[in-house]
Amino acid sequence: MKRLLFLLTLIVLFVSPLFADDAEKTSLFTTPVFLQIPSETSIGMVWGVNGPAAGFVEYSTKEDMTDAKRVYACVPPLRSIQEKVLSVRIRGLEPNTKYFYRAATMSVSYPNAYHVKVGEPEFSAVRSFTTLGANAQASFAVINDTHAEDDTVKAVNKKLKEFQPAVVVWNGDTADNYKSEDKAIKSILKPGLAKDYAFLFVPGNHDYRGTWVRNLDTVLLTRNPEERNSKYWALGRNFAVRLGDVALIGLDTGESKSDDNPDLLGLAEFESYRELQTQWLKETLERPDIKSAPFIVAFCHIPMIIPRDDVEPGQSASYVWSRTTSYQWGQLFKQHGVQVVITAHKHRYRCDEPTADRPWTHFVGGGKSPQTATVFHGTVEDGKLIIRVYRVGDDSIIKEVKFEKRKLERR
Ligand SMILES: [Fe+2]
Ligand SMILES: [Fe+2]
Image: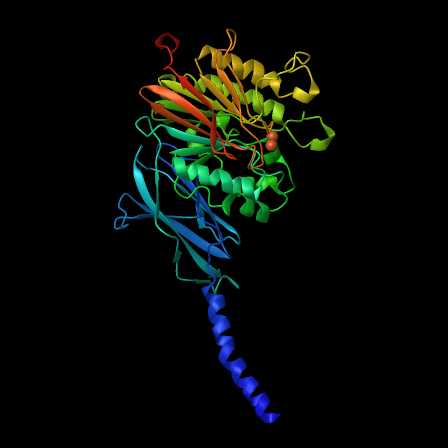
């Protein structure tokens, strides 16, 4: 018996350090880096960490990273120490330029201010992204209503990898709701959707639901404030960017329920938010880089057209958002020659062809199952904008539309 106990003790002494090593080798990264909020001169990066941790991103035009610059995760004047998610905003980039990047995470031990210990950096693999701009490759993809359905996310991700677009628009309803930071990390960062091309996020009504959702900007960053006049700083989700010959404009339809709906607990102000976007859109469509674009494509989550004869837009509590979107945004699109509006939300693909009164094509993206999900791919080929809509389930093209350049007199 004594010999057995002695043997067991020896085994424990021998094996336990091995487990300790394994624990130390656990990666400080819990997710890949998620590229987002791209512009001509900036980009955002967010990744999950096994914290408490600090971190930085290095970027360079050279693949060997020899002249890399470093930007720390930081809310000035303090560099960040976070438990679960780190983010970096990189500014001062050149338009239409390929950059290589890698993120680094360091463990932080902070028992008190006199005994802080920061570990050695653990680096991600080196990957690349390309900044936007009027000379960039005009290739964009659109996904929507993935609702954190693993199979759907996998299926659309596979399709995106085939296209290798310059950017992807995630047109809302990334999940049903966000009750915790862990849910956001699992739904948005874990799938590794945005390692090689950046995502432009357009919120859906479900992206405003859940007790934790008011912190969503820690995972999905708002746009850089310097992109807009200070009177529009509340519009951190709106974007207007040039991608080659195409201008991409993102609008936020917000909640589908009216502000006085009891479900919103008197804690929402979407109506004034949408009205402010009308002013922003009016000015944005006059911006020289947008006005001069041969093609303009707009995105918003909730469809702008209600295909019902018995409903007047804006007159029903069920369609309260349409007071702003169908009337105000729609008129501006018409006046400024916007050719395409891509929406989502209904979980059923639809294309409303242009009419004499509404000269823009209105798309509604597909559903949240792999069978009904769609991926849009837009490219400029031989001077025309071509939008192809793929049904992910059977990999078929269900629609292909070619758009001529906007007429000069409209500019
Ligand atoms: Fe949805
Ligand atoms: Fe929706």
